[in-house]
Image (cartoon, rainbow over all chains, first blue to last red; front, side, top):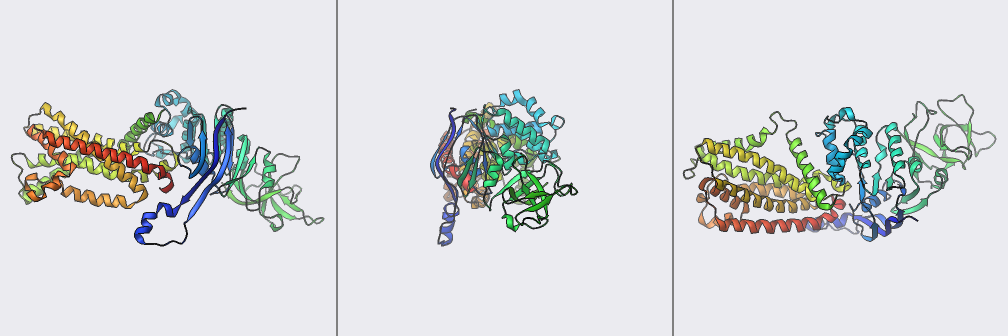
Length: 333
Length: 255
């Protein structure tokens, strides 16, 4: 069995507004009856083995990014123990420290130094970094002329050619076009087994495409650890849970285009209305289908009929509580 | 890369960034480095020598003021910029793990580059004004080195405190304004009444400026004063490093 690369032992981390403002409160004689404290991580324990790709998933404020920052030694825990074996490269914000006035090349060196990459190694890999980012033509231009996707590509490429043992990525694949995202995913898959990778994302489907294992965070705790198939995991989510998937076809065109990100919420099946866009699946197919509720099955009230906006003439798909995966509550182009 | 290696690398890159960004959208670009203290000293010289009839022994007043401004500008801009540097780079503090001291040190070093360019102008003016350049001028570098250590210590404290209490930035602004008038930059030490001289003696920047003028204009250095400056600078730097290291553990939590 491979060695442990990162281990959290009952790690607790809280953020206290009172604690950080004690002096101000004393000076202003402001009396508070309670200490306003946010528990970001509550006695969290887990292990990550060398070469493993782990996905951290959960709603905003669930503690996954705090866990990542603690792994990177940016935050210190209140209690508990962390063991990290190997050199850690946190890529928590693509574009971190990039300056709009500097050229792409100058920014590669600036970003690399922030990430802790030796300049000699960056020089050795400079052409590869630029080529992977696909910005050869613009590398001598000031970064203020770059699009946000170009900036992200440059930053990701720089991080990719680091010599760290552990790579930490926080929502890094939320930017850039579909083509670049696919390229990044392939690159991460290539690193599997050689480097330990931890990825935080809201896009559950994306995480399942390249992660070996998932940790589902909620209110500072791990509520589920899963290495099982994605659909089983999605079925198991509670009513308040939200997750994100990416549209892989144009079946809901023009409302949803291929590449759009869809926020899906597990609203109770019996509360669905005509016209709602829903996600569902079937045992014999691997994909998640996203269609619009077109009517109720006359034979059974517990069944809904759905159709895709782009292929409305085709037959209905029938869904029940069992294969229903949630309602699309937001579409991000 | 070890921690020190990363410190050197980030500092170098931040200095490069500061120098490039500072004048990137201005027409005159880096010429401002020289022009800024020069114009300030000319304006001050005109006002004080004409309006107030200020006389400084046998040294032209503009030279006297220019030396004062050179050191003061280095101190003032370094401390002011360093105080706000962590807040200005909040994203880096929260999302990256690198020696945060490099942000403060880089501000000092990028202003040191400005100081060197200003020194070139002072030397040029001295030559044009008939002063003979002498090897003793190299002693000036020692004085500025200890000024750098002193202001680095002060900046480490003010930058760290500013993360916790943003009032620090405003307090520093006011303090620097007051400090300017309590330092013999535009006036000679001789016009300060005896009973207030202790204030000047307690002021390390006043000591720096007086020593600088001694070296450049009189080919002389008060060794006792230099030793005093050295000790003050070292103590201030140690306090700065200690304070910064202690407070930085919670920077990402509170910023």
